[in-house]
Length: 257
Image (cartoon, rainbow, N blue to C red; front, side, top):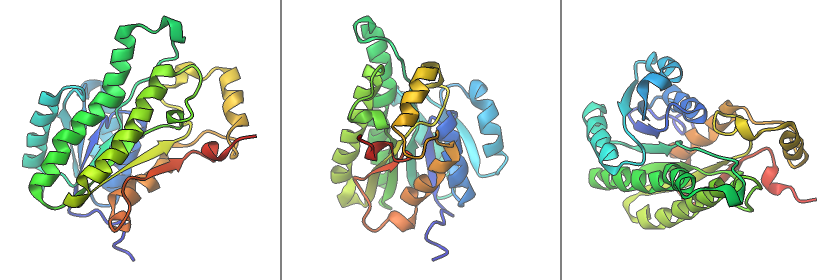
């Protein structure tokens, strides 16, 4: 039983490791023995969140724009060269962005930006690191980050909701596509975890509405996502868990009236 959650000897790639949720989940993977490749677009901006992870001695920073396949391919090669086992065993995609622009005011540029970061980058990362895992022939675990806004969609975040619905679809499609190669693909559906990308839309009225729809009557703490991330990455889930959308939402998804 003690080895179920042991990630020793595995290399985890965290896309968007400089984000609030990404850095905390990376911390958990490192804490359970994994080496962590911290992929960020701007290492200097992400430094405050990355420094504690680098202090573990089992992490390194790799620069890449998550919406550039060429960047991700270059990073994948650098990561395999750095990795103690020469491959990527886990890929956790935590890059994301949001906006509360009213529907009729959404520009094509904003739509494209949010869709690129939240959906296109998931597709590209799964192409690059999924192929890398297939080529290595040792299976693997891919973890995407969805949202309670994926369905039914939340008000005021039209493009974000649409992008996260796409993440759910890609997760389940790729679980089927990659299963013959021993690669599991699952999503975590966080509830409301205040982070840089959503603080701007958390007005007092919005907070009251969220609390009224959350049985646990509070926001989540980012560390409460760590258990789900470690479980999905580990041997504890390796036997039969794929295509799952795992809710960590304080009961938000179970609430009706």
